[in-house]
Every structure is written in C-alpha cells, then in structure tokens.
Image 1 (cartoon, rainbow, N blue to C red):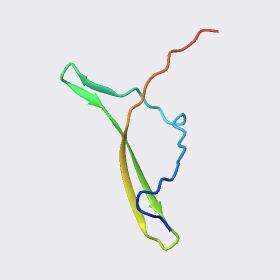
Image 2 (cartoon, rainbow, N blue to C red):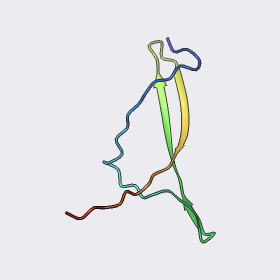
Image 3 (cartoon, helix red, strand yellow):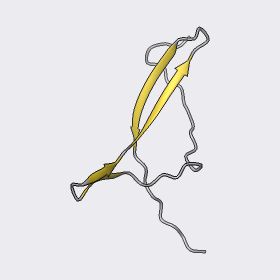
Length: 64
C-alpha cells in the first residue's frame, strides 16, 4: 500500500535516448525542456501520476 508522502526511488538510464542539453531562452526564439511522466500502478490497479521537469547537462568529453 502506498502512503501519502512515501518515496519510491526510481533509476532511469537515459543513454539509449538521443537527448540534447536543456536550453532556456535561446535568443528569445526557442527553448528545450524535458519532462518525465511517471505512472505507478499498485496491486489494486490504482494509478498514480507524476510529471517532473528534468534538466540535462552535457558533460565535458575527455580525450584519450
């Protein structure tokens, strides 16, 4: 049974997806935002929904 305020840790690997870094307000023309939509279904088929904006950063590439 899921209680109000209970946390469920979730690990999501994003490497299979071609994502670009999050960009906000590029020359007042456009922005790129990503949202994670999560649906949790419990044992009694009740559904819980959560939408969370995520920020993606590009890591610096190191040369060998």
